[in-house]
Length: 325
Image (cartoon, rainbow, N blue to C red; front, side, top):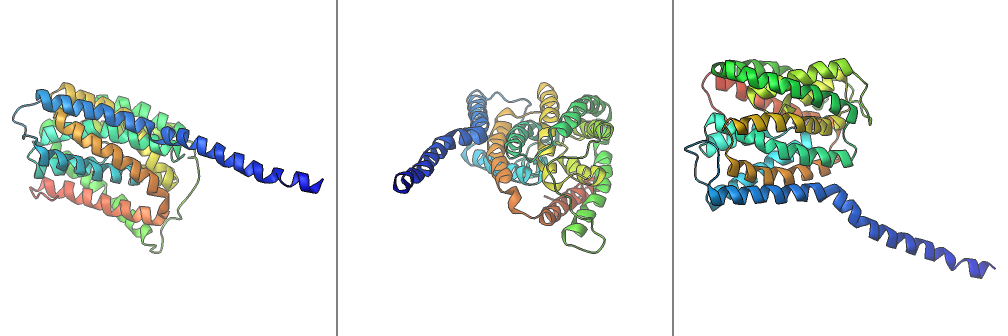
């Protein structure tokens, strides 16, 4: 009896292995299928725009092979940063195409916000399948963020001459989270204990107000909002560090779609350049989302702090006419 039952035991693991092998393909397509679809879409749009020269605006820099490769690589770096720390990558793409590639500031703003649509979709979905986001917070922040984007886009038309002042205000505002994140990231006394978990404590009214404010900033300044969402979720609402990454990117999806769509309709998007940037961001966001949990929360805070300090200094120096990359 024992000899007949023992051969049956190896058969079960064998069957389990084959089932796992069969299940690998659905897992792959679940994680990467939507991003592959996005890549096909932006590739087709880029090819169409390059072939027909269908770009919004006038006097745009020409796109040759080297310029096209540069745009993809810039998008890759921006997407990697976005997937890793929960931002859309505007702070990488905007100065790169403005200072290095000769795009005017208004076109650079519109083009990068257009590319962030794809960064947010790719990175947000990647974090969703890895359970790195809070769905309830995303819905509240994103829903009220749309209202804010509409208000901010209207304000942009009224306050376009004051964008430098707005940049100075933003730079000063983000000095505090930058310094605090660096302080806690290096483990100096008085740092806040890093909270971990799979959900955020509900703050629906606070999320609504915060989402609206982020939307207004997105509409006025043209950045995706991740630079404010990440420290805001951590310090205002005590969110777990890992959850802020995916929640931030997912929240930016509707904000970028509405804001980027308005910029596109207003003629502030270089379609070919934006599509090439988007192709790089899609791949980079997947990589960032995949490796994020290899970092300790304190390490992530240090990365955030250095990054936001850079953004803060860039805004402040720009007000005084000093341009840094």
